[in-house]
Image 1 (cartoon, one colour):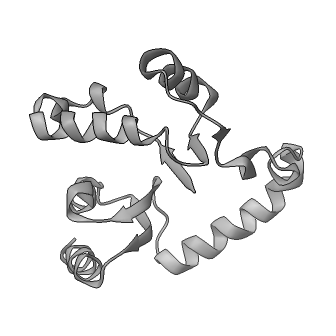
Image 2: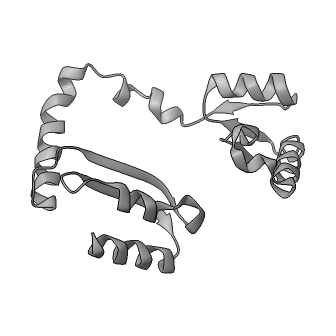
Image 3: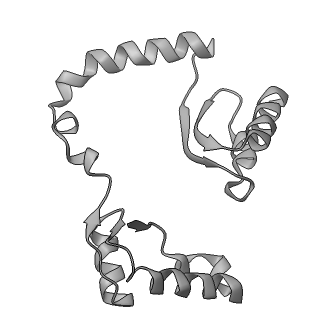
Amino acid sequence: SIATTHTDVPAHPAYKIISVRLAWYWHIAAMFLPTVHATVSQVFAGVLRWRYYVPVHAVWPPVLWSPAFLRPLDDLCAPAAKERARWLAYLGFQPRAIFLYAGRWSPEKRVHLLIAAVPDDCALVIVGDGDSDVADALEAARRRN
């Protein structure tokens, strides 16, 4: 089995809530059970080992160290320009900046606040996964903005 830890919950303001604190300690205790416990960086793996004494067997995503991400920057300029042109055509205007949200669509992520915070001359691209009710609410929020 594989388990991951990707947020240092004690650094979050919600850690003051006893149920959040208990859930964190339960999560840390459970990290001794899987075959592989992975995390997001070597630095955070060190924190988990040092602060919580839990084993960390892997750092993900290894795709970031694949040859595709190690190519010279010049190799990526032409494909990037083509992709930017495609996005600009899709958006229908020249935004000052394009923001990206990549993650799970769920109410606790508060993506609706992100939609409301994007300036009029900017664009927000939302990618990820979630249930259809949340996706419908995000789409409705987009139409209002």
